[in-house]
Length: 142
Image (tube, one colour):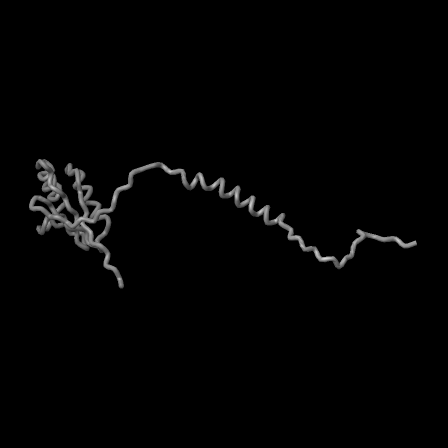
């Protein structure tokens, strides 16, 4: 009497069906991740962003150009400013003119941020409403 263990089939039989269970699991996980992250990525506060407009500098006769050199020296148009009090006095006299002239700050690229910041703070202290910064476009390196 012989006993047969296991299924009764031929062991050399080739299974031609692909097991898709791992593929379905991965796809379901990816679907859940996309469903969770897409609303977060698209939900933003609606704001009107400013348009970039590069306008050439127009220095009118009434405008004041404050230049800050590399060593922190401040110039009123082309006249050197001796002290903070001198700059504040000139700016206060300019602030009462109607309409207020534009104050344009030209800071040297190698000057310290502190020197330009002091000029802007002095403008604010004197009551200047608008301070413009004059910059150069970076040169394209071909």
